[in-house]
Image 1 (cartoon, protein in one colour):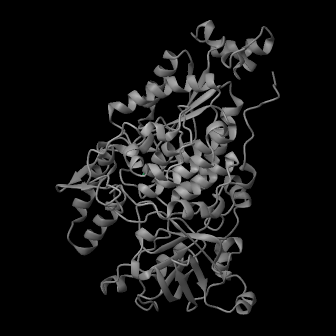
Image 2 (cartoon, helix red, strand yellow):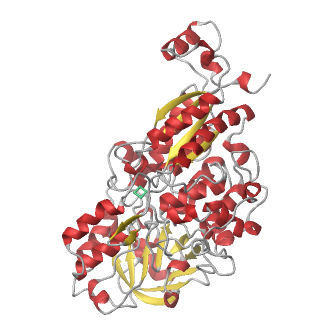
Image 3 (cartoon, helix red, strand yellow):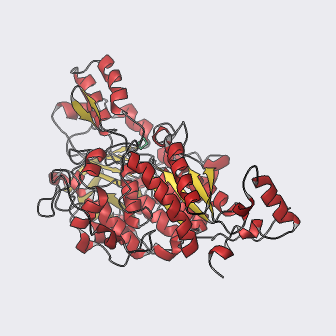
Length: 574
Ligand code: FES
């Protein structure tokens, strides 16, 4: 019997009994009888939402997927799933990533579905979809919604996120009026699509392709480009083929796939947020990926994509220059040749025909944007389970540093005091912000790249060492140590730091320490103010999240969501 004759959906539709009658009858509504006889049922898990503006165009993309599914003999079924709009959600979209992943996983398992096409774009949407697909382990393929087109303002291109900070600084400096600032809004968001810098959305789309979960060459196609619809159509056809071949995530996502994703993450100069997302996806698959793998595999890979915030160009330019395959071709020798993709063929075999069409945007290996990209993992008595720094985004003179801590117990405390003229802080100080981890905030917001004190900015200081248990926007940079684990609210030593303690950073030695004797640290009790700020929520998702979320070093997933349950459903209520 072929794989198609053993379709999972036959458990709902095959036979003459009452249950099969109920399942078919309610789905008929004009659907021909053969739809229930051996045709793969392909869900189109769609994160389109008016409140996730970066993904709103996915309705049209879904329609192109449908055409491809039908053409290949499948039955397309649109499944709206939880969608997370990065700019709109309070207190932070990351609080809901695991909820979106859990809800999507459950709906894929509970429905008569044989395979799924995953439509995502805005920061957390592709990670949550991949976490869900990994746990339910049905044939799955991603169509990334693509970046928006480059907007220009006063004759210059605008990068989403990065240029918001630059323009707002111009207003503060008096070189841009408040009216002009407001006028730049529609120039910045010129078209449909997600942020066009190398922020988290762009990073996760490209990393998903390097992982092998996207049709090669598709990630990074701008959202308004008609080739995205063509790719969606081809992906619909591919989903039907994947069901026939029983090509489930567990059959092609291996440690080798994550190796390639880490090489790609470094070569594109991607967001540090990819670390927590990749760890969480690997956790669902049972792949033994650790924080140290990011340092070991990625830290010596050159950054070749000259994109904002580290470089000059935007996603539209990367696509024009050849896209991810052209970047990967430059580092082909660093990729694992065994890692497979949704096509059934290894990733490296898809790189043969690619070329670089603009050497300014995609640099040759001999002239990288940054010689060593990637992420360094620090450990020490301040971060026993690890912390991250992106050395390429840091100031070289701060990579080895000793300085007195200036401690803030929450982001609100930070905002209340950072610009106080009486704050005892200088350029050597280390800004320490706690209470921003997965449990403490809760939801691990992007606050680690704290703005510098105004009085130091006025003196020309442009970077300082900053330490935090939160995350950082993919569009930000500086000498920022983030994802400190365990976080303060989980009893990490960050809770013991006092203003004036000496913090010691040595990136080359991969160390982050507090120069306070161990017996003194043992005597200290966790800072009362941090714990007072951490009031455990009483009910709902926040309660479940705080009770079960794990630390950043393992992906900040919920403890009971680790691993896979597969697609089996053994009971039926009719
Ligand atoms: Fe959606 Fe940036 S806000 S990708």
